[in-house]
Length: 331
Image 1 (cartoon, helix red, strand yellow):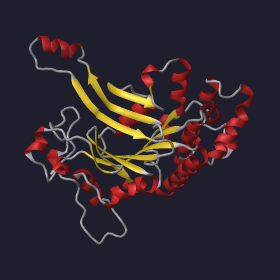
Image 2 (cartoon, rainbow, N blue to C red; image 1 turned 120 degrees about the vertical axis):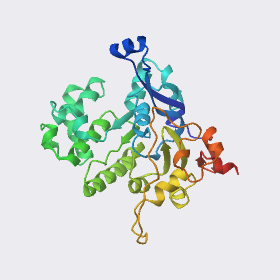
Image 3 (cartoon, rainbow, N blue to C red; image 1 turned 30 degrees about the horizontal axis):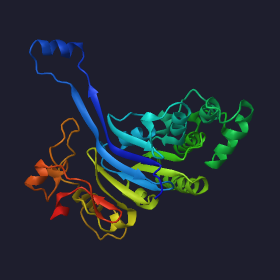
Image 4 (cartoon, one colour; image 1 turned 90 degrees about the vertical axis):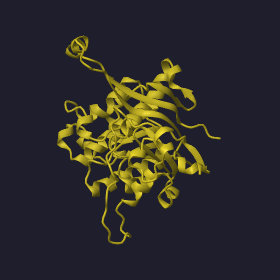
């Protein structure tokens, strides 16, 4: 068996808003004021093999981006273990820790807010590899030019600032910055969501070319099912911080198992679909401040039973390579 490049074991992430001075004083006077805890990610287990493209899908607020940031090391998980090539990243020190951080990079949704507006493109791309000793000062110009060409940018633009580029070009700069430290694994957080459709296609093709040329592995976070279907080898469906289904892309789109996945796919626009009226999933996604007991999806699920309201469904294998967290699979 190949060792997963990234492995998550019972990873949870909670954000706690502490009481400020006024709230603490109000509580001393008898007011019912409590700390707020956001349950962003709840006991996620996931393995990603080298060279794989895994699509992570779910509604806004389901914890996709938080999970991606935990994988990339931007956030530290509240609970659970993240392994890089079989090693618990919490136990890594010195050179090993640095290597694991450099080998896992992240590309953000909004390139304008993720690029330093005060730095020229050459500085944005060369800053990290120069700092970490991957290149020498005299190699910067050639290295920046090579990296820009790799992502489809004219190296003569290297002395420009981010605001002098279009949205698609800025996203390519973000990709170049990630590639500059020679990563093995890239977390793409809604990396094409802010782009025009034609530019999206160009950037997606760039991702696939880079995968083939450099042997990259992707965790591709998106709410666009069409993009995920086109790009991914395997799809992971998240709902309110939990993984509810995983499956190879073709199998999931052909026969979704979990009621939430079924609801997502049935309302996805398709060219071959007959004329019909689209309706959103009934109800709204509950607040992560106070998630429902049992199965998180039960308030919106047409098949919910009393067991769903009480017992958390386990993510079980329902067929080779497929898992689902639904009590209906036990029947």
